[in-house]
Length: 181
Image (cartoon, rainbow, N blue to C red; front, side, top):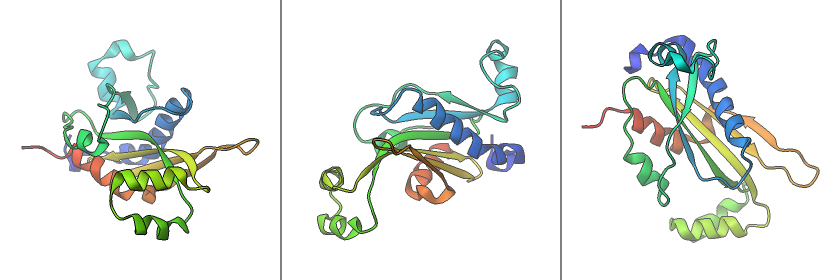
């Protein structure tokens, strides 16, 4: 499926597909590894695999299809090695992250760019919040993000949807949809 071949119904369905991925992943609770999903046009999926008719919503424009677990280790390196067949309109990644308050930027800047040190500082920050981020993209560049910030005690989880939540991650995901030579 080329970028120009993405029908408008798929671009408008992307935020719902990102929410569906987050809902699916949240049923298994917290402390999960990153999970990757192919986003496939439902009509095409059912035409190729009619036996799935009782497992997917035939009215949904996009169906998320869970992929095999990603290898442990460097997520960026794992994603860089992925190439999707043309039947895949997009992809989504769910991963758990730590969210820090804006004031933490100065402390992070002092650490530099060492990912291990940055992760250590974030994990030890007293105001950190655990969250699950789902970033989803289509071949035409459309993107959607859902962030579930984990509640604590009697405080419920907070869900935030915004396309600009993870620009670096959506760029990496978009690169997985590019034709590789």
